[in-house]
Length: 362
Ligand SMILES: [Zn+2]
Image (cartoon, rainbow, N blue to C red; front, side, top):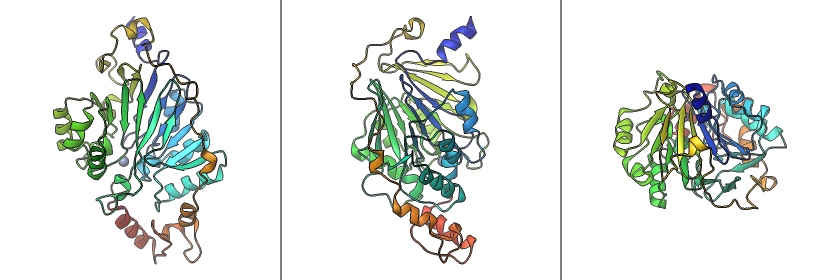
């Protein structure tokens, strides 16, 4: 009986949008599926993560959209493998380049598969999903952050998923400048916050949490990671925000089911004990028992397709030249992230990349 109840809780009901913050250790991989099985992956774990196996376990057989929030390896480590297995209609990143073999391999894969449309994620881009759900890009804006602690982190592609009254915010590894920009933009309250940068103390500033007022905060973080994530200060700020905090290092994969009128949470580990129903914004109490679909705005007949104008966004020549230009360099590792500059050694190139990125943290 208990198992049967959990089975019901662990599957999406009619009309529900399902979001899985997948336990990939230290890194991010977030899966979104709509009632009509539009499937979106935001980030694809670190190089040694088992994202493909996790996607198989979750029953994924295709991707409509893949978003790489930024080029650090704990976010794009398995992205090449994923988009090779499930070529998405559209691949989105923040338009920045990186000097690692992991990133270079990914760019080659995106360019090589002509079925994949490339699109730079910028504020104003909206992907219409089915059932009235949509995924909007909030940042970067027209001008990227520069000279921050980590420009790659700060310029993460920040997306917001809305479904009826329910809202999810996915800030990648955005840091304080990213969060302050959202506050300045007048970012709206949002029910679920995927906590930025694995709970690092450089993110989740109080002014941002006060604006978002999340009911649920999910930290994607590895057990015993070498960065000390999540940070004590961030944990204390999240505690003060009143959000219920879930962590993939303790809870395993965290699955969230949105009816459009409320969200329930099911965690992979410690079944029962950590399985929780978190009411937000007037969730109908009987929903999980009756399977009744909450009343929602009628889906727009036109809102079906994820994109769109992918053909209008070919793989950008700028990225291509930066990644592939080898004349006089001999090795892509010797090309800087910002320009076609050759370095005398791999070490020098890596130092430049770290300077360019602002830090070497993932
Ligand atoms: Zn990261």
